[in-house]
Image (cartoon, rainbow, N blue to C red; front, top):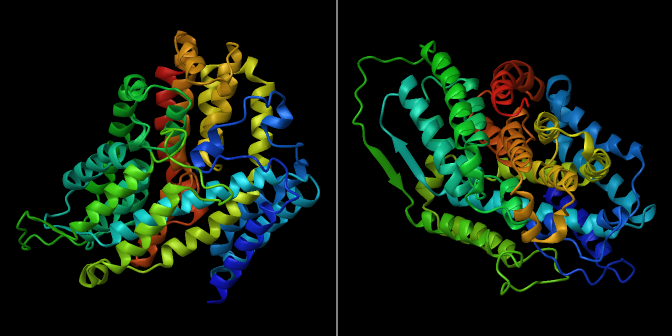
Amino acid sequence: MRRSTLFLVAFFSLFILLNSDTRPDSTDTSKSVTQEKVLSHSDKTTTETEHHGAAPSPYMVIPFLLLLLLIAIAPLFFQHFWEHNYHRIAIFLGLIVTTYYATVLNDFVSLKHTLVEYLSFIALLSSLFVASGGILIKVDKKATPIVNTLFLLFGAVISNVIGTTGASMLLIRPFMRMNKDRIKSYHIIFFIFVVSNAGGALTPIGDPPLFLGFLKGVPFFWVVEQVWLIWIIAIALILAIFFMLDMNNKAGAKEDQQYSGKIEFKGLKNLGYLAIIIVSVFLDPAVMSWVPSLDPLPVGIREIIMFGVVFAAYKTADKNVLKANEFDFGPIKEVAYLFVGIFFTMIPALRVIADLAKENSDVFTSSLFYWATGALSSFLDNAPTYLNFMSAAMGKFGFDLNGGAAQTQLFLQNPDAIQYLTAISVGAVFFGAMTYIGNGPNFMVKSIAESAGVRVPTFIEYIIKYSLPILLPVYAVIWFFFFRG
């Protein structure tokens, strides 16, 4: 109760502050996360107005770096203190940046945008978490390396239909249940690699950066046309490594155990909730002009529907299914607290990146776009990172990201432009798997696994033991064959 009270006080204080009569740009009517990240007023022609005010002091990146450092080392060196105080620390660091932007920069627009983005993020994650928690999938098959590999491949494919978040929330529990006698850390890690990240690189539904590109005028099927071969190679390499690791896992082998081969499915009505969530993603004024804005509320129709699904899906869920899934709100509460700090402390870092990308767009090659987008997407929100580098790429050819869909489509008529945007798209999606905070579903999968008693690597162990030695060589192969020029 004390945690919830602290969070609500901080949230409503921020909301009141952002909607006070003294805030600038009070006529801003954009309401959704995609609008806030993508759209800007056409008369904002200077760098300062495009980025909603004066540039922050470089020292204001410190709260974000400190939070990142604490997430990495606190569970190792002072776990008990961290487990009982991480929510306070995350909110406190977020409030440092909030106070600086409100009192020093007088920049309420950036704060409001971030609040809208956070609420949209948590609405999607929480609705998918609760809806999928009411679905029980039992696969009565022996968890052999080939079965596990095919399961992950299936997850990679459907992540392009229901998004990496939807696929992750739907499949992580049955994947762990199927491997209950032989579950290891690498099972969770490769699930994050494939289902929560790289799998969703083919469609705008798959991952938020690609959806933002779609809103800016990138044709819906453009990504799959450009990325399908890269996707196949990356997924094949990652799954090949997983298969070899799983071949050496002899834990829990019971040769005399019988399997029916059946797939049990309970909670069919929750598929309807998942469908509502996926459809509601498109209920955005930037996609459908008839969708109303709810200004000055920091949420739109989409978020109201998603939060409504959270309530309805939990209240109508089969209690036996929830019990079988060992469902509780612990994982989503952890994500909500940590990411409110991440979102707000990240504001200055994203501004610095945006300025650097625009100022140095002339030196960017496809190689640099790939590695720069990827490196920053590993630790920062990959959606605005994608947009910043897309803006830089378009600027190289004299086009404006905010000039409408027609400018984007003219930009994509140049072969070099196609190469650049492909590099940016792949870097943003693939590299989200490099850390737990690189993409929203990553931390959710980690928290769900921990709640189920599965031992997962720490933040640093994840990077050193898995992402660097496994993913980086795979991504280097992709770079060598597709973006080296």
